[in-house]
Image 1 (cartoon, helix red, strand yellow):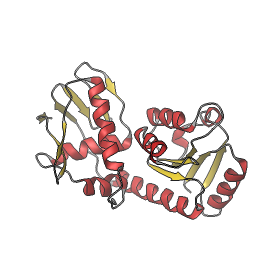
Image 2 (cartoon, rainbow, N blue to C red):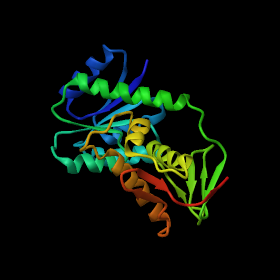
Image 3 (cartoon, helix red, strand yellow):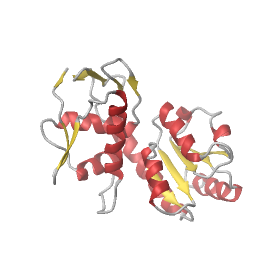
Image 4 (spheres, helix red, strand yellow):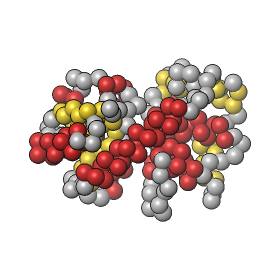
Length: 232
């Protein structure tokens, strides 16, 4: 039975979701705030559904904390329309974003898509050993990345999968369509910016640790290419 942690302060919405998802085979935990949600270990859940507007610490801040401590999939809910909140949520590591009001059936479909993708990825043989490039070390066994200065650069599950996909494809680039299917489990539409946001997020983390870390090149009409010489 998959487990979901619903972080939502509106009891009407959380009661509706909890009842709907419980009737469809989910074990549900509801927390009315980020602070109360943090009392439960992220490892106890298979997916999070988090509202943006929460009392105290908001949902985006909670998402940032969650992504620093866990790789569990996260779906953000928000009553605010427009691209800004959605892009911020994705930049912070959310896996999906849904505007209120929403159809519970659509949320269920998105949750199941995330869980299927997670199961497929866990079933694949993960790369092992260490990959070194320009003084950096990507520890594939522990899924950790260290800068030339020895700084640990925290990666979300999607960021880790992106860098390993780019390194594994060398010397070829990886198309946005392939990244969309392999990492997000979707066929990208013309306006879907999830891949671009993910690449931008990884670039920022690399450059924050080392200003010379310009390793991901955009190849026109072909996608993204890792451009640092590597060794194992």
